[in-house]
Image (cartoon, rainbow, N blue to C red; front, side, top):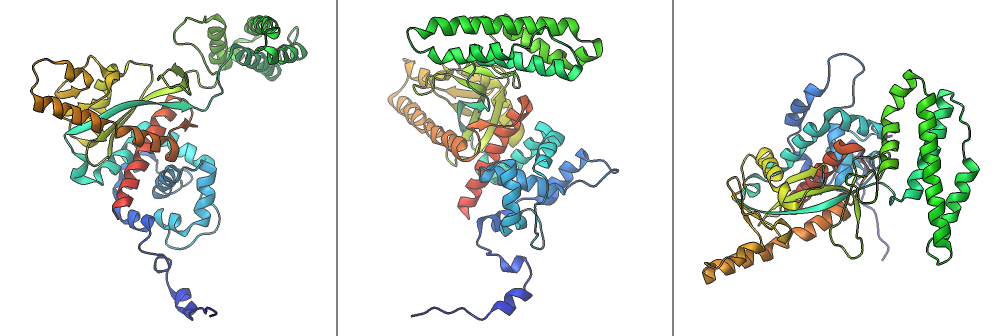
Length: 416
């Protein structure tokens, strides 16, 4: 039988924007849960009362949350907003708009404007939406790596970048170099293709040493010939170049990327990925409800046990209640108590004076701790924690808290 269309087009055209949407949609319901007015009041002090009007605060916050919820880039989030009426309703629009709400770069400017403090307010809000469920006394704690958007570092690639950047700086400031080494560098990079063969490895190593020699020569020449005003502009870059050229294989705090010099190398014992380059992140989850109540980025590569104090203070600050018990894995061995928080890890089972009940209770808690592993997997695959595209240490902090905020909002959506 041929289908037919209901004749209610006139009623649809006469309805308002809100009435045309499905009230059972998850974003429709979530928009009513979030305290937008309170957020606007909290973020108002980041703006001044003069100059060109900025984009609405609700629009910018909602774009950040939607971008993280749906694992989209800044450009894709802005483009999707113009196509999706539910995204527009979530951001406070009263009628369907055509065109993009802002430039993709406006999201960058907004993140820089509010900084870590502003993003932490959003994270706090997502925790408070869960009420008492987020105030559990027992929490699960684990660390993971937030990889930065950099290429795998090798001496060859880094030396070639120094040569290229030195030539670029010289052209910008009008300094004439004795030689640019453009052809030479190209041949030396080409020589690396035989590094994995028995005959080519010696040739490749010689080429790498030659590239580093040329890079050091250009940095010294540029340092001599730059004027004082030009040196002030490029001092930071030249210092990073010099630091890279001086570093040895066994040194600590090495330079792995010139545009992200804060990146450090982390080995988590993964068979498929021995080394990861980024920053270490601590995640804290409530034991029963699975709400993230702590997401702390660490600027330095620390032993897991040394991250506990910072992350527990962070949890206390964002939710207002300090956890009584933190359940960890054997990576936190040696830690029994941090302040008023008791730390439980496999070391606790080594105590001799334990009853059968106490031993079984600890075993059950340690089994439950494994539940944080799939959570971290979801943060990486679904909420943009696998690779961080935001610049600098501030970008590391912002990305991990936005990922945790998106997880908490998704937990709320699943309850609808």
